[in-house]
Length: 500
Image 1: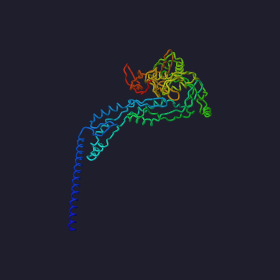
Image 2: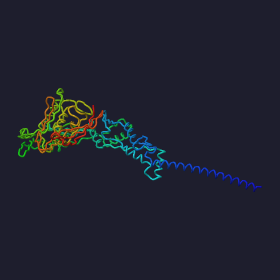
Image 3: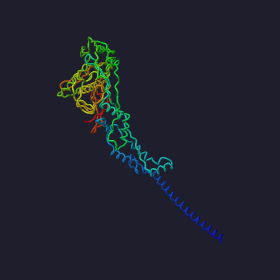
């Protein structure tokens, strides 16, 4: 009996195990079938995707869903959306002053076509397994593509340098000029500069974030220190041996007079060392006068009018008129020899009360205010147009922050003592002479010299590149005209102005 019971129990156990095994097999078969269906479906969807002309599901560009779109549709959708979201400018601030970087001005744009091409290629360019893996992964988790931002680095750098040149708290290098029989040496003043290599990424990052989370960017600055006064270098520039003026007619040549100038180097160094933080130093000059000057030579030495340019001023503003007359008198009669560089600041000198200058409107710190010597930029701007006509080579010139009332955009030249100068070189074969006058509401600059056979009628030609509610961008060219026809144009500058 016990044996029977054991056999019976054994049979029941075998039947039970067989039942469990059959259930497991059924489950395994069902799972395999499901997996097969899933894999087959994935393969089918992948094959359809690989052969389709649309972008797979789960793909975004800058958060914009482009799933199921063709390349052309995706480019159109993304371009429209980004255009709608992007601002047309970025605001930069320094203290209480605002400056604007125009997106079009620096030619900033996203490479949308490149991003769409990449999106279209997803899960289509690898082998079967890698493509399938990528296809399924993106279906499950999505992918957001950031298009490459392209821009004109030269334009951005140039504009930031322009902003730097117009910031308040400007660096002033030491300078010097001659006033009557005295050499005036002015000490330098610390200023601020823009950390351009730090600001650029901040601007680009803000553009990259088309939502512009930051409404403005604080301009990062650093302290700029002036060079120490170099008395030996000043002496090298100031010292001259006396020479009489003369000219010859065959061949034509003019030799300008030179006033002998000298000063005591050691005494000057001692004066500066005894008071190194003084605003300026007055040094007595020793003059030796020539017996014959260029003015004594008369018109025969400068027989031809090479250029003439005039601008208008308001005679009712007496203080500003005084400044105009003082600046014009400084450059009037100046002779520039071939290869010689004319510096407006050195010739005109520092604008001081002692020199007779008055308070008048100037552009400063991003706006209009009263300042000593206000108005003399009209003389430098008038001179700029005349020297372009005379085919001089411009060495240094900057535009104003705003378009001045007396000159068109692209035809002005601002000057600031110690920081911004207007310089040009006489690149003609013969010397030139400047005549400047201020009278009856007209400032006028004439340049005399010798005309040659290859002369052109030269003038500044401008064109507006961009005009918005805040900014005006103008390109200027030196245009060469002969017989009423413009022969060629040489690029001068790209100027950016802030609108009032």
